[in-house]
Image 1 (cartoon, rainbow, N blue to C red):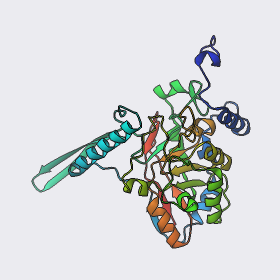
Image 2: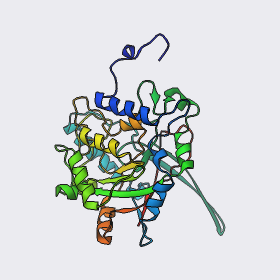
Image 3: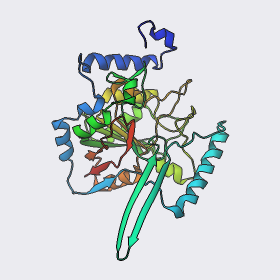
Image 4: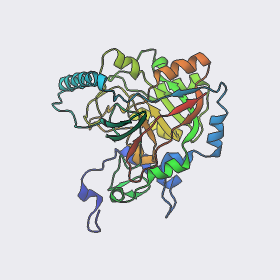
Amino acid sequence: MTESQTADDLGPDPLAPWLREIADAHEAARHVDTVQCRGSVALIDEAARLRGVAQVKLGRALSLEREIETRPGRLADGREIAEAEKRDWQRLGIDELPEGHGSVELAVHVGIYGRHAHGGETIKYDVHGVHNTHLDGLSHIGADNGWHGPIPAAASRTDEDTMVNWAQHGIATRGVLLDIAAARGVDWITAEEPVTAAELDTALAKTGVTLAPGDALIIYQGRDRYEAAGHVYPSGAAAVRRPGIGEDGAKWIAAQQPGLVLWDFHDARDNPGGALEVHSLIYAIGLCLVDNCLLGPAAATLKAAGTSTGLLVAAPTAIHRSTGVLVNPLLLY
């Protein structure tokens, strides 16, 4: 804002009062004058990494990434899915899908020279949306003309470096998987009943783990089963209720001081304004979020192994000015 403007001149506060309180408390506890705060990733220290390493007992690894479909023979299926999504949105009263949200364009270049061959490619993608597994940067959700840090929003036009800093810091810590669907005794969470703090506590109690600052919360809500049953998960671009975590759960997450959160369903948007309750924590506490994780197989595998923990590694590409990157989170156990 300019010197002549006040916050009131710019319209209503984009943060709900409870989020503003969380943001103010975080600033008082964690921000230092002239030092840019790097949010939740800064909580991942040597102790957090060692907690993660200590969970690796079998030397096995699980990928938590949803596959990105680029095979030409499968693209028709993708169009059918898009049409189904469009019909689902129309039932919700939404006429148009946002263009490009979560899309990936891949051009593969192959040269064959006698017995020699060479391959290359160019790729263009919209990192956000509800399809591809991606890590949100601090410059994804903001307020008051800025990002968490504080970082001026205008810096994203020139030199915003969250992703570079996070990549160089190293996102590797103890991961704790909370099976909310199992705690509730259902196959998946429904839009009518967002995940509550009590359910998060119940799921955590079942792991037998005491959380520590910097841990990765891996929150399974049954999205793989939901989609296998033919349901389409609505995009965050539409202010509609959907399965996920609401205000109560968002407050719980903030209180745990996680290094990052990985989840399958996103924000429930269970509020009159359709706000993104958990995503708003990106601004309030600098929360590192990994959206659209494939967690059903991981939940089943860890249960069979008799554990809920592992070493979680989410290594983003160091791209200046990036608001997010596609990522393949790995859980070693």
